[in-house]
Image (cartoon, rainbow, N blue to C red; front, side, top):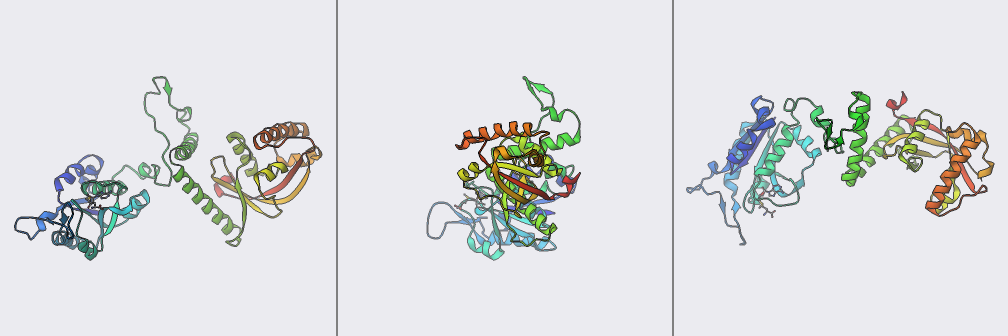
Length: 384
Ligand code: SAM
């Protein structure tokens, strides 16, 4: 890939591009980056490249002629027309998704403005797209162009040691990266998390995946919501395609069981193994929360505690009966307990706790919704 930066300050760019990882990437031929001095193209005998703005106002505007001639000379050096990008606070704001898109191009020209900016006519003539690095204003386009060049260059093959070096990093897949640690193992009484020390790749990968979700939810709830929504959307589409169901098939609910992380994930495991095939809930809780009662035949997506979709269940039977009338034959379908006493003990405690939080009181005559379901779909990789 080739990147050309058109600027009035080539030294500023060259000093950065010669250093560190990008500098080595250029030296080793994994990416070509050239800087071009717009001033060299001016036809003005005093080498001026700017003039006062029409309509008045402070500041100067970069003129069309030198910019046009500089960019045209660069285009002539490319086999196919490169994408022309004007660094501008008015442009679309740069994201990692945009960086990936730009990294797939053969050539980019990054045009740096200065002063009040560039005469609009030359931007129109060149068909330049505008790209911003954030909603604030800098004195010139050089730092923004260097940011784009750096972000795009590190995705070129060979610049980083391998694809893992960027594909697991923040933003690449819509999440932030998990925390990093290095030696010593204990520093000022703070230890490296246990999961990273045992050398078991599976445990480490699971810890990293969990931390990545946790860190994103904590630091960037906006990103987390977008990520989870996209995961649900993708999972729903996979499920409908796998079962040959129409696109408008209703998914009645998206939820995890239980009100604690441990139990939400434990019950999910039982569902995935086909051991848990029923659930009981308080009718009062449904009424207080304004939820519709489950209906035979409906589909629901079950997530883990973090909200990541893991399977689809289909409701096969729904009955409402007093708590005391639940037999072990029914309770056993919940897959958690080995006797009715155990089931009752756990559920009395759950309903008492939930009742205190929601505002209902547990009694032995309390109506319970007993919903039976079957595991309808899970991801292929869950099957082992
Ligand atoms: N008058 C312009 C405006 O209000 O939109 C701002 C011009 S700015 C002072 C000068 C140059 O810095 C711009 O032409 C652009 O190339 C660059 N620049 C400033 N902020 C930028 C940002 N957030 N992203 C990309 N380029 C920026």
